Structures are given as structure tokens and as C-alpha cells.
Image 1 (spheres, rainbow, N blue to C red):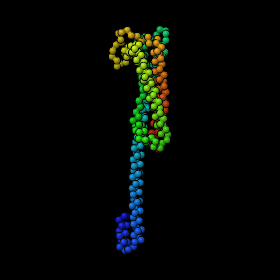
Image 2: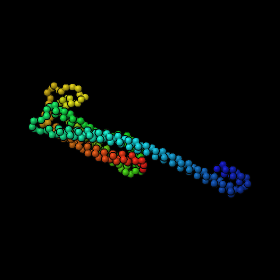
Image 3: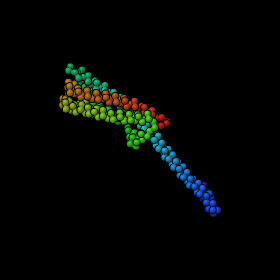
Image 4: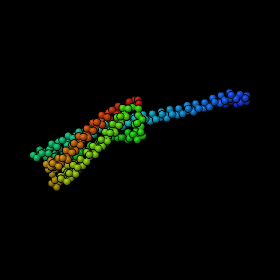
Length: 249
């Protein structure tokens, strides 16, 4: 088309028809500008399309990550429920009267109470989404709010989880100083050694108010952790539903 206009301009110059020459020259310029604008528009469309594909792919992967996290959360939650029951049972055996359980049974009970399950969800893809600033660009406002809520709850979980771990460590340290950790570890199938021959007796721990307080701390913190996990599970289920939609925006 441009070559066509150029030929016309040359002919008009030869014929000294300058006014028409200017008209065709302007027309040629307009065509060039239109061509550039169209090319830019197509390029922008392609870039936006590529960005949408990347975003949708990331959300699909995020959907899978959330589903895997939910499976692990349910598994850890069951372990925590068992631990809480074990801690409550230990709690019931703090009494001045004679124990109804043998030393071996008490050691087995303590072994279960020393277990400290924790949930460490994968956040690799979610962190990528946050670091790139893509969360703010999401058109799905519900999904955006859920992601922010998830982030707040995860920070809360980390704080509670840290305190819970510290309480568990305090119990182990106390048994080391005032009882026999070896007799407790005998109940672990990976511990292939017999009970201590030094005459240590963990039953005396159940007469100790300080040890009772340590158990109380761990029980309280795991109940707190369990409550946070319940909140996270509700958000996680909603996130799975939102990221599983065919249309993300």
C-alpha cells in the first residue's frame, strides 16, 4: 500500500500537481502511523495474553499446593488430637494417692505425651505470588482477601507453634534432670535399648507440681495450636474452591 502511494506521489510531482502530492504524502504518513499503532496493539495483546497464561498456570499450581497442604493438615490434626488426649491422660495421673498404673505404663504414657507434631505447609508458590506483587493484581477480590487472611493466620500459627515447641523442650529438659528419659525412650520402637539400671523412677514426677505445670503448659499450647489449625482449614477449603474455578477473574 505504501509503495502504491509512493508511485502516485512521484507521478504527481512529474505532473506538477503539488496539492495532490501533499494529500497523498499525508495519507502515506497516516497509514504508517496506523500501522505502528496496530503493531503496538497486537504486541500489547500478546503480552497481556502471555501474562494471563502465566497467572492462570500459577493459580492452577497453587490449587494443587493447597490441596496437598489440606491432606497434610488433616493428618497432622489427627496426630494432635491423639497428643491432646495423651496429655489429658497424663494430667489425670497427678494425684497424691498411689498410682494405679505401673512404672512401665507411666513411662509409656509419658512417651506419647512427649510427641510434638507440627504442620509445615508448602508456601513456595504462594510466596512467589506475593513477592511478584501478583496478589494485588488479582481480579478475584474474594481470592485476594482469602490469601491475605491465610497470611495472617500463618503468622499466628508460627507464633503459637514456636511457643508450643518451647513447652515440649521444657518437659524433656525437666525429665532429664528429675527422672529417666531413657525409660521413656524405651517405648519408642527406634530406641533399641533396655530400661535404665540406675533405679530412676518417673512415677515421682506425678507428685511434682512443677512437672504438672509443664504438662499444663504444653496441653494449653496444643489446644491453641489446634484451634488455629481449624481456622486455617476453613480458609484452605475456600482457597481450594476459588483457585479451582475455571475462570480465575
